Amino acid sequence: MNVEARFRDRETQSIDVREALKAILLYIGEDPKREGLRRTPKRMTEALEFLTSGYRMDAKEILSSAIFEEDVDEMVLVKDIEIYSLCEHHLLPFFGKCHIAYIPDGRIIGLSKLPRIVDVFSRRLQVQERLTNLIAEALEDALHPKGVGVVIEAQHLCMMMRGVQKQNSEAVTSCMLGRFKIDPRTRTEFLNLLAR
Image 1 (cartoon, rainbow, N blue to C red):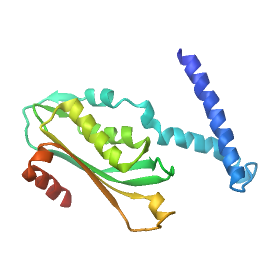
Image 2: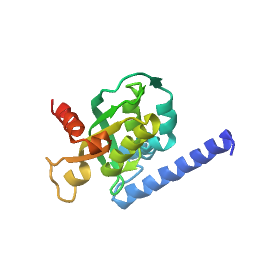
Image 3: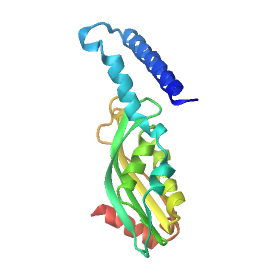
Image 4: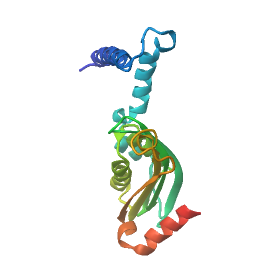
């Protein structure tokens, strides 16, 4: 399919989404013609495109663009990477921090690529458990390091605004690969660095 046809398809889909959002406004008892809501379907469509832009990004391409040969074998850690995602069960946001560490095996990656890879996978409909694993596996596939560790701490509006309505709960997930999984000292070093 050529670019023009894809653009037309995307534009047609965008119109369909706006019509569906008008139907949702009617369903909840609102008037989509009300001044404050007239442009809401268009704004929401644009917001959805941004919030799910990870579907249109290629993790391998992003990671492969900044890999460097380097004789380094000590842990590299980037912590407190902000994450914003949408829970696939309720389409409500979850947000928090992601911490990524790896032990190079002759290759390193530009540090800015770690937050970018978080965005690739968090800007999709997600569950936190899968998000954690996808980030770790993408880094492992790109670098073949001695180990990878990823920890995500997040708050979920689906637990805070509805359901159990617990305001101070936080979900913590981890994925440990290679030395982070098999060597307790490496895992402990990583977790201790996160606590600082």
